[in-house]
Length: 163
Image (cartoon, rainbow, N blue to C red):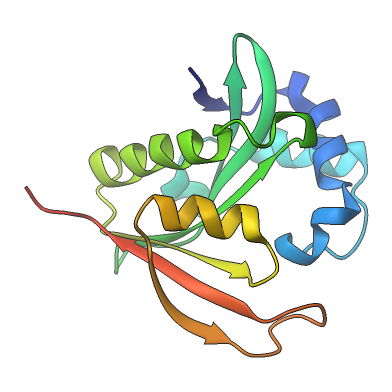
């Protein structure tokens, strides 16, 4: 069972490793390495309030071990929507961690933050991420031809279900 928690200064070594994983840069939009100082400044500046910061990064944790991170970003409070980004460390992949983390983030976004729509842009060659969002019933609405030099991308979204 995993949980999501706010980032802490003690997470900087993990963030440093994850952010500097060049194999994920094409998917994340990162184009250069980040320093530990960059990450420390980010952690120090983060209030943990998505409406104040415009984004929210949470650590994915299981039994006290950090497995990755998940983000809400590109927050649009007027239209009550935000984008999702996720990174699962290589040794934690293939165990359903990503799907569990997205489910928890959905609960936070829809039930507690009162957002109505979550979306993500996924490279068409990123099959693990595509599978996560397919399994969670996201609507795949558009193909973005030539989105990156490496591949096309798709936009997927999920609307809050009113009960």
